[in-house]
Image (cartoon, helix red, strand yellow):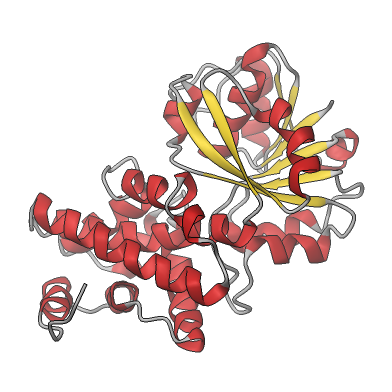
Length: 324
């Protein structure tokens, strides 16, 4: 079965490396011509994943038409560019696995809805969980949620394609729950980074993770997600990872905000995408629309709009006391 990956950023490259770890050939589409050349000649992607020496089976292309022969495609483009890139596929695959985490700005649509509109003949799945790219590329163990819109029949097709000894997928049919976990945790990771940047301590970060998880559950309830999904790898598992390390782009963004740098400066300076910054405004809008209380998400939006970090934290701490 031919497998391709759309997007040669750190995560897309790591997934291609993981899929090729058993000798499989994997075709990786990259936007930048220099990335294509380096992968094919030196088996490296020094721009996005410099730590990894890529397997011989990873081959790069800059032409989306080359992916036409792939039965399975993993889409790892930034969430805001998913629709435009998938729409350019001349032959959409039987199975399209979405690996980007976010909500489409302007429309409030989850990635599965975006993809289903432009790849009408593909069965959509969501791959999400605690996965730092450099660790996956190095073959370190992790587990993920693979949520299949096509149910167990799609799982039976995809799980042998994706599973490796050090990369263990778990089945779910809750596509919306898997997406919510991945999107919301990016915003909460910014908040945790702010706590770190302000030097507020481990207690504060643990409390924020717990209260952020409560917000994730409330939002999931409003949109029909299953709580068991949000308590699993794509929700709580990914939340704990992303809120605990500067290896997370979103955490690093929040840490810099807490240290006093401006959001405008930070977003202009970043070659890689801190997806939570794009997700935060639309998540706030959706939460308002569905009546889900998300004060931490509100606070992150204030920070991204230029508010002083210490003042925003003080506002959170002065909210009325209530039952947990």
